[in-house]
Amino acid sequence: MIKKNYVDVEEKQATLMNGREVKDVYVRWLIDTNSGAKNFAMRRFEIKPGGIVPLHNHPEDHEIYVLSGKGKFYDDKGQQEEAKMGDVIYIPPNEKHGIDNLGKDNFVFICLIPYIKK
Image (tube, rainbow, N blue to C red; front, side, top):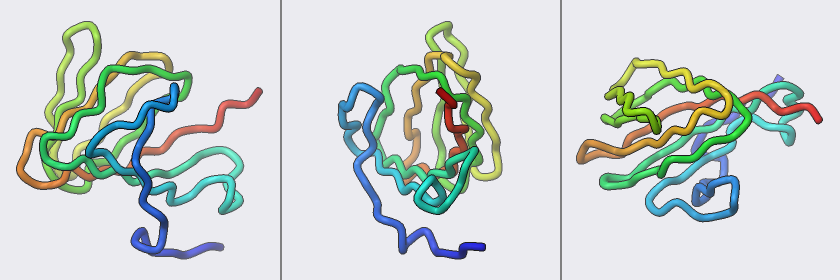
């Protein structure tokens, strides 16, 4: 068993799969292979006010739980969903998606992703 507090995990600038940094978006890898996790990673994201994660996609599905703030999740087909504390979002594998902070506070959420087995 491992117990830690999120503040003890290094906060890093978020990057897209192509390595491009995403301004005003930060991630903490709370549980990952370094913790011994074999199937899933748990990440905590903070999007600063005005921050935007542009449309992108990847092979992992996402399971998201919103902790605080107000944000918008959207896809390339015009679907948009506003989200606030307590909301959950599922993003299927390879679906193009983006995220905007709509509020004056940080938009904070937990995102679980599976490891892709090669």
